[in-house]
Amino acid sequence: EMEKFQGSEGKKEDEEKKYLDVISNKNIKLSERVLIPVKQYPKFNFVGKLLGPRGNSLKRLQEETGAKMSILGKGSMRDKAKEEELRKSGEAKYAHLSDELHVLIEVFAPPGEAYSRMSHALEEIKKFLVPDYNDEIRQEQLRELSYLNGSEDSSRGRGIRGRGIRVPPAAPSR
Image 1 (tube, one colour):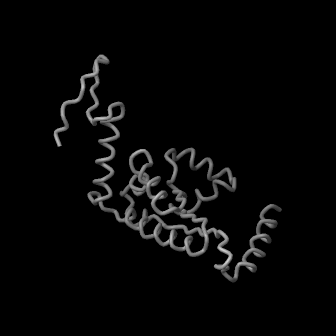
Image 2: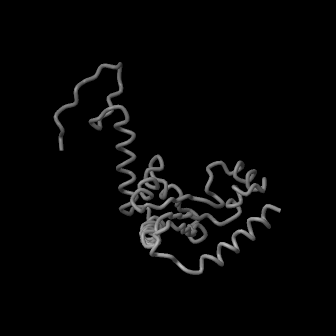
Image 3: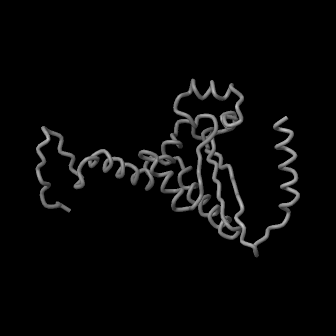
């Protein structure tokens, strides 16, 4: 019954939304599903490349583009057994687990701005879907990872692990 109700609601909305009102500048919601090419490149870790160290790459991508991005679909969860269990549960919020692995890009803004943000997001996400093990994105992520791992508790970048004696860092060598 819920599907029937939601289905009829969606149809009415589509009929109303035949024209785009750019004068009133009301926010519109755009969403696109971008396929992650795991079938063409089964060995490449696209999810890892998209997320980056501690999820920072995806967070930064969202901030830069002004779009919300979610990695969804089969293979989007770490725990395969749990993913399969949730997929079989049939709950609506886990329905995406039956789809191909993809990135859902959502934008909520006035029409001109929304399409501009979506365009920017699509251009940026494209760079992450190239299966290059040694590209600029990967190099940047490795630098960030070594920075995060090395300087978690010191502001200099040299993590001194010892008996708690703080040795002031030497003059910067760069």
